[in-house]
Image 1: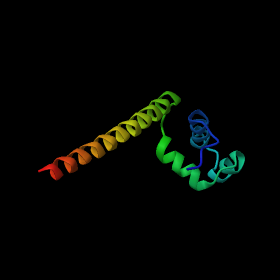
Image 2 (image 1 turned 45 degrees about the horizontal axis):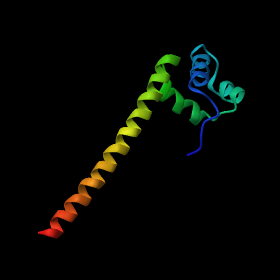
Image 3 (image 1 turned 30 degrees about the vertical axis):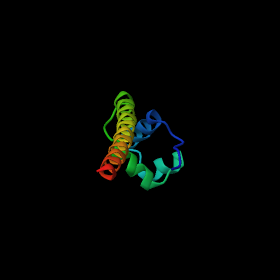
Length: 88
């Protein structure tokens, strides 16, 4: 997946400019983003402060790590069940 050129703080600043009354087309042209990107950011970060965005990023990272741990444990569990079922 392609990384972003903008940090969460920059995204929130762009969204606040849009809330201040700047038109979407001008805003997108000024920051060299598409309208689709703007509306996706608005859906994800709309109404947030930068501290809330940092916390969201931290929670998403923690969730990703926990999902990885669950996947590893599930694989171990299945492997042990297969071994036990073959011995009987």
